[in-house]
Length: 283
Figure (spheres, rainbow, N blue to C red):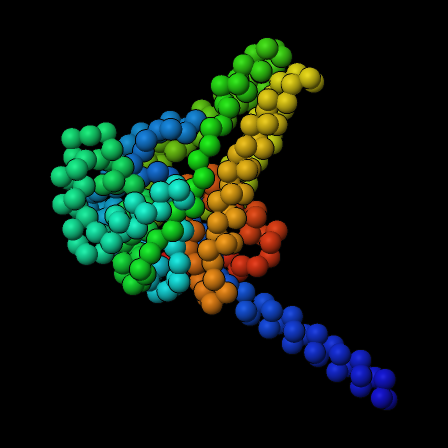
């Protein structure tokens, strides 16, 4: 009887420990998005989307209102980590209400104006941060050169015609789908579509399914390119790990959808955060 009691007590303690460990997990709202300012620096070239239109602005207000209810302790964005001081300055101007006058005076007649005026960092993250009362938005991007041209040359040199066709087809289908959504859907629906398990798996899988195979048996140009992509995202996630305090209950990570697809995998493997999806906040 005593042995049975001890076993039961041990099982209860184990259950309580596991339940407590789960309950104490910090929550992360992971949002993958398209680049509102559309710099067309990615392989998928898309048409412009009117993020400044009345309907888009209304939807951004709704999204950020829900993020406010989520009440994050920190927000991380795709901004160079090495340029945090500038991000701090811009955010303080935004909070103080003189951001628009500043960018109009400094950038209105430059190519940079669209980015400062339309980018998701300012349209979404700054708006959510101000509503939540955050004093700082953190940039976690670690930019590096991805040798895509080298990969294409390696494919051509190895006469990997089928692989080249697979890459071209993937890019064409992705471009067509993205452009159709930009023509027919609002910003909320587009973002939600970019955060489905299917979209993330397709996005993250592309590199292993195609790019990783580029080059002859003696060339690892493709694998090197994929490793650089992983490295960039690992560096970004490393900053999330380092900057998230033990006292933070909830954080937001807002990145391009390709990065978010990778970060989702890292979060799952680390098993520290409980992922919250934007669709759940918008119900």
